[in-house]
Length: 284
Ligand SMILES: O=C(O)C(=O)C[C@]1(C(=O)O)C=C[C@@H](O)C=C1
Image 1 (spheres, protein in one colour):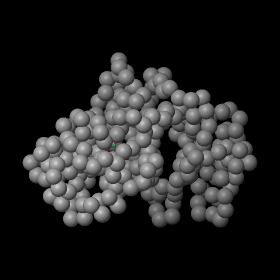
Image 2 (spheres, protein in one colour):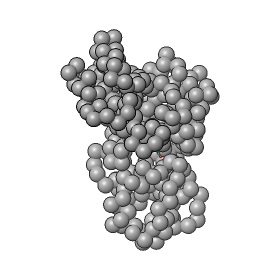
Image 3 (tube, helix red, strand yellow):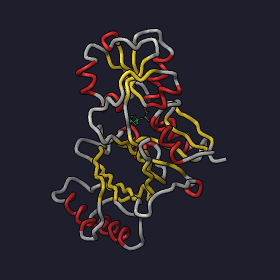
Image 4 (tube, protein in one colour):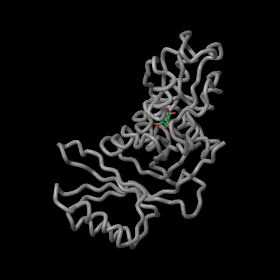
């Protein structure tokens, strides 16, 4: 049976992403993103699902850095999940916000609710956890007046009460999750025909004027639409960066090899991290 690793424990957004696409497979929650990626690399599970980008807080840098510097795995799919953050408390602690002394959650979830925390829970200390599911677990096991930020699934899984719904600071909150696997034949993602992407990793030869402009023009004159461009340090010294570029279409045998050889002629290193379908989960 196909097995799937995800950022656990139960009740995380990553688990929601997994459940929206896969059913019937064996699912294993891992404590951290690197542990989940390692499990795919070692063959402990066939597929891994990890968060990569949130509409409010931006890139999940742990994921991108671990995938580039530590364990390179093919990206075989993407799942986009609507994110609603709720303030969760134990059923007995339902009276007053000012009683809450600590708020637990994943750093990305806390960042998505900064304004709410600033306005309504100014006196409470924020505590980072490895996931929103873990935060809900901590709150459910505690006798203290503390709260977690997480989703409805976490409230159900840990028997918590939703004290305040939708506390994220901006509407239209979504997170993208990457599906990683060395066995693409085991991954079946339903998606619309035009919903496919290609992710490329590009390293510039050295700091030279106009280099980024030359890179971008290799895509633009071929009318390849880019949906994301991100720079991350190569970790070899100040000012040395990779570019991670998402192109809004699947890899083909004409345009992409053309881009690759044009960039290589400029002295860039080009790696295709994956070409894959994108599934959009509907709001429930
Ligand atoms: O903690 C979770 O529930 C996760 O799945 C992680 C994560 C993230 O890393 O961005 C996923 C979605 C939300 O944006 C908040 C947290």
